Length: 222
Image 1 (cartoon, rainbow, N blue to C red):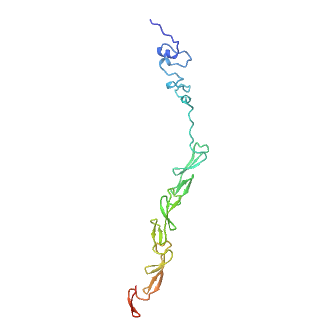
Image 2 (cartoon, helix red, strand yellow):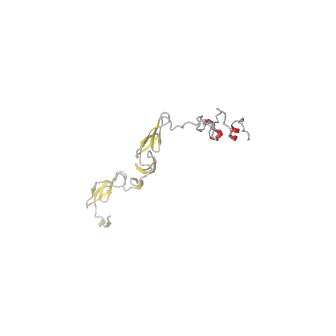
Image 3 (tube, helix red, strand yellow):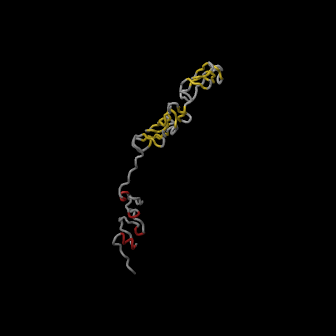
């Protein structure tokens, strides 16, 4: 009968022969049955000592990094159209308040729109274009002499009359509006024997479109 080989060379020989248990207190209990030693994790890396196989971060090249900051301590800032307030430690957001539809977030606060974002509008004879955030605008075109800024199309158009000056709307003596785009309401309709001229009703000196003689000459009246 062959003799039993005794374990004298440590763990490796014992695992190969599986003929005897490891020495008591060696930390290799269970090795003879193919188990993983309780103080080693998978791949032979040391564990946290509890025998669970959790890898020690130091054995993998250094201690694990701590959690990163969530935000800048005691800060207020804008994020996706909302005002965000960070706590003193930078570890948590205290509040997140969305701005209204007519507001935009700027420097950590909700600001009222000055104009409709990305739209054109008239301002004192000038065509302007609103910024994407609605908080400012830029000049696009200045309407020169004889032109006015049309509110509907937000563009410069040729004027109908001299702004705020007396004007004739057909046979009606009236006044041009402040933009020069048309006439104000009211005024006076000139009678059949008068004519509107420069915003005034003036007596006719002849019958319009009639031929008359004066001093031996024939005249065609307008």
